[in-house]
Image 1 (cartoon, rainbow, N blue to C red):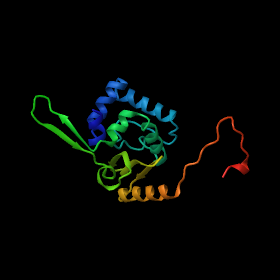
Image 2: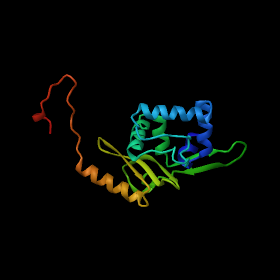
Image 3: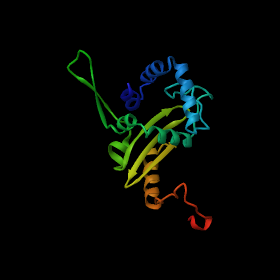
Image 4: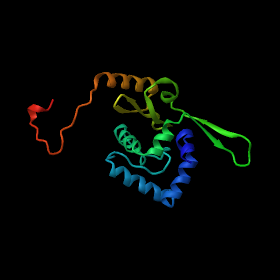
Length: 183
């Protein structure tokens, strides 16, 4: 179900997962909103498990989607599914497999440092893309909403960030620093 949900945007898979985990779509939606609050998503409210338009009551922001991606990346199963380029789904009683290809072109052909993400589209939000890229010891997340050039936008964001951002060691908890020591 997770591969169908992530790779094919399977709304039926979202509902099946929601009913199993939350007891009902409503129960799962409640859990979604609680988890969103827990990870700091202050400008999101969910009314369904699949993200399809639902009036003004179902919404989020690019920043909140970045927080969600950061949280999701701490889950090994999410990372495995998110970076899968092609999945073979066996068909019970058949001699053939259904083959699903990842719709994330950054991952499959456009950007060598992409390590996963999720595409999306609704009439209200337009084309959406949440992606992650890793180069050296730095992992970045990019989010675009209603962006017709999302692939190019993400590549540009990553190229700029990877060339201009540098990691710095944070002070240890016990270590005292003064404002003059912080760059």
